Image (cartoon, rainbow, N blue to C red):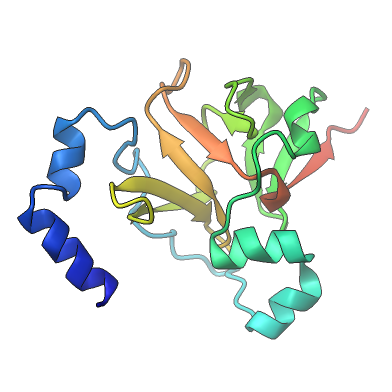
Length: 171
């Protein structure tokens, strides 16, 4: 049975996207960003073999196969310096360190992405819909966004640490 068949069956039973909203899901619809990555002239498209050469095994699993690293496993959780968090796949700046905060989830979390950095789409891997975000340049999976974050956005961009590279601000 295909994913489409499963999703139609779940909708029939009232377990589709509408049911998640009614149940008070912590996931959010794509916030003020396009449903897909913005059109870019600098888009990075590589074959699976080229990505495997560029990334280590953990990065490939998360960025290209939409895996999730274990919570509390990223050294970026403890990163406190000023700087920029870039996509580990293509070096596109995604978040400023000023948007990072401690969410207690075990993954690096941010309240606001940099402009034009992310694309969004709905993910049904856990049956209920969640908003997945990815790098707008290479399409690499970064994490999921939830509506339980701090001000100013009220959003929590929960990122896989292996999908990021931290670049400290020049002294």
